[in-house]
Amino acid sequence: MSWPSIQMDSIPPKKQSTATKDKVVLFGTRTRFFIIALLLLCLTSIWCNVLTYNFAVICMHPHRNSNGSYTSLTLEMMKDASIHDDEEPHVISFSGNEIIWYTANDKSLLVAVVAAGALAANFGAVYMINQFGIRMVFGLLGLLSAIATILIPSAARLGLRYFLMMRFLQGVAFSANFAVIGSFSNKWTYHKQHGMFVSALVAHLQLSPALTMPLSSMLCTNFGWPSVYYSHGAISLVIFVFFIMVYRNSPNKHPLVGNIELKKISVGKESISKAEQKSIPYAAILKSWPVWAIWVAGIGAFSTVNMMSLFAPTYLHAVLGFEVKHTGISAAIPPLLQFLIKLSCGIISDKLRSIPETKKLKYFNTAAFLGSAVCLAALAFMDPQYQLVCLALLAGSTGFLGLTTGGFFKSPPLIARHYAHFVMGNVAFAITTTMLLIPFLISGLAPDNTALQWRYVFIIIAIVMLLSNAFFVMFGSGSVQPWAMSQSRMQSSTDVMRTTNKVAPVPQNGAEKV
Image (cartoon, rainbow, N blue to C red; front, side, top):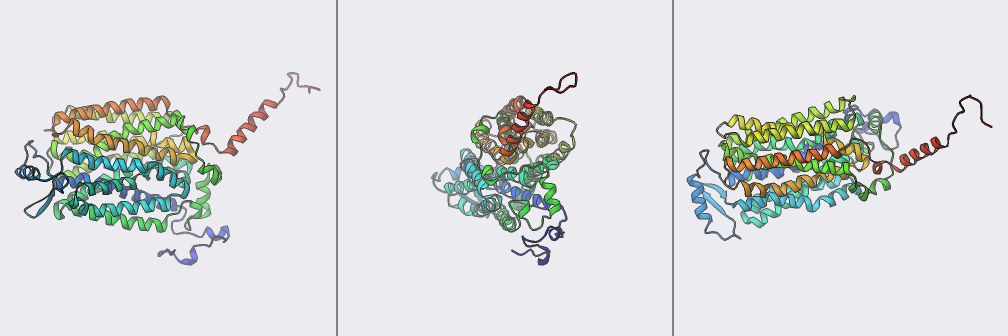
């Protein structure tokens, strides 16, 4: 493989000396920061592809006016759509604009099927990454996401079942995201920068809507809803082809990582055989309360994240009355705020070394969940006429969750070490389970998108957050668990204990005992 920006003689062959390898100078001793930026871009691209529907549906299927009444166009669509058979695509043309009609149940299915795809593929994705590494597994899933996204406009015209198939494939592609974060953080991060690296990668959940909402708004307004899918899919293709070319599963295999950086990355890491790493202690992990604390906290956090990511455009447009061209920018504010807070808190958490890790995790997590729940409760009783206040509370409810990078998100690498990809990978169960349930919760409680109906949604999610945080405070941990220690370390600890127990006590008079 060639590196266009690097002279070929600067990439040492595998058998070159240590001194020669240290001459790799493209990124100096900061290659890992280039790799994490590339990986963040890839993770963001996959989640952007999932989120395209959540904005495009506004253009595909108009909602109410700001005063709560249906537009004449929507009423005419409802009348025409009633003559279609359920198996036929509801494609209607008005003034040259292509609009597709979906019922509330159809729209819930189009969101939930992504979660179904991610749930179905989650364990397989974790297993494949454990066996074969990130590069090809994640790379191929990224290409799958890109192709499925490009095909969505054609699938939507063919009928609902074909649209559902493409959305299912988007979910399959997303299934590996958290396993990728866990595996990467274990192999590529310097131990004093765990919080910063994990926070940066987890923040793809907020960076994605912050990017895709304004872009989708512009594309929908100027080029129609199909352009949203085509542009996102094309960008993903380019990104993941580049990723497969550049990424390596381990820093010691990367031609741009010199010995100085490699030694820094390896500080504090245990040497472990490939056989031991691939032999995951499933039973011990599933019996571990700190692991369940992470997963339960994930349910609370992602209940809010999915509500905002999937339905913020609908709430802003249908309840608060924002126009389509303003909805994209407004919907981007809350996740952008959370993205910035996540990055900051990851760094701050790494710097606070005077507080024990377990206490630090619980402090950050409680501040995040409590702050978010309070904002949601206030939003539930706020009059939608105060648009800016509602938008500020919406931003606050997601912004506070940025503190979770110092909370439960930071826990998997600390407690699971080289099995972090399994623990973090199954955090995906939390996001996919809530992604599966939230659409039906909202369609059931807020079918007409009124302020009163959304009040119940906000209150229920606030309660879920408080309960899940209480569970994390009781059982969460920042200490490595026994099942995560390598066999050599466990044997060493056992030998030390045996040696200590065999030491004879020294007589008080100082004389040797014969």
